[in-house]
Length: 164
Image (cartoon, rainbow, N blue to C red; front, side):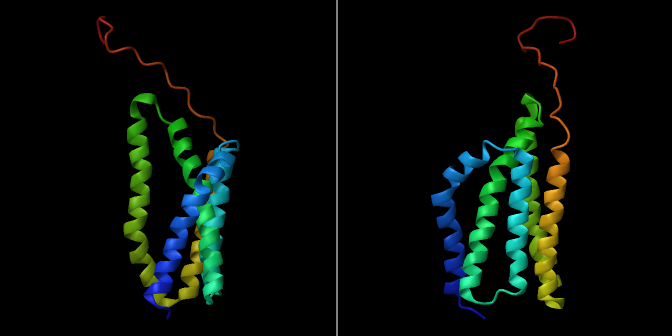
């Protein structure tokens, strides 16, 4: 029931928080476990959106945007670094593209599923976002239990030998 200006202001707040806090928070997360930071960010994002089940005042939504944005900042750089750690040098771009495609896929499927769920129960949608954040955190922590694979060194393409 709020105006477009309120919605736009909340979106602008997200961008402003990223501009001012991305670098200091990225420096902080860079010294910590990548999967731990992805898990923390996932919990923050999920809990922020879950708070919309009860948060109806603009001030509460401002707090929600702040927490959700912190979650994004905490999780995104370590997630990309984790994917880079798990990819062979020659396929790093493909691995990063796959990560990007998962975000794009969520941007396409999420609104479709979200509006269907919201139509039946807005509270179920927001609680579902919180549950998804917790599941994501658990999966990130589980992924951290496995060491990065050791990839064999690639031969230089200039090697002139049979079979290369």
